[in-house]
Length: 124
Image 1 (spheres, one colour):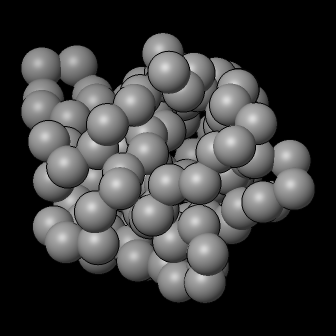
Image 2 (cartoon, helix red, strand yellow):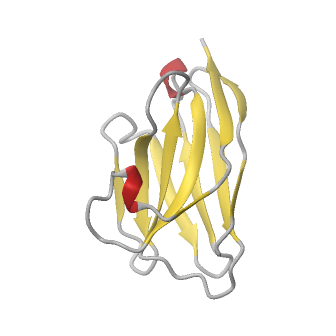
Image 3 (cartoon, one colour):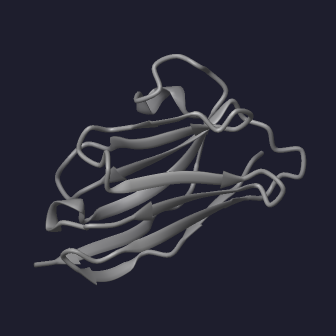
């Protein structure tokens, strides 16, 4: 069973930046892709970004395109989300997750393992 641990969340002012990290525990870790999702209070969990593990191909939600960058370090089994130009509406718990499928990249139910989440709060 893969365990994912996120870190790097915190409180930041609007316009600021944060970098989230997600570390996978399993040595033979090799998903098709890893993704970041977020969930704000009272809202459904939503897709943020995804990166394929082998080729590093990225895909972003329109709401974060141009502001967030997803990257990975295969040797460390880690994935990152660099967030800049943060807005109050980016406030949420951010989760990383793994998927074995190439289709439906934005669907929560396509992801197999999830971390516990890290809180990001953007003040205005």
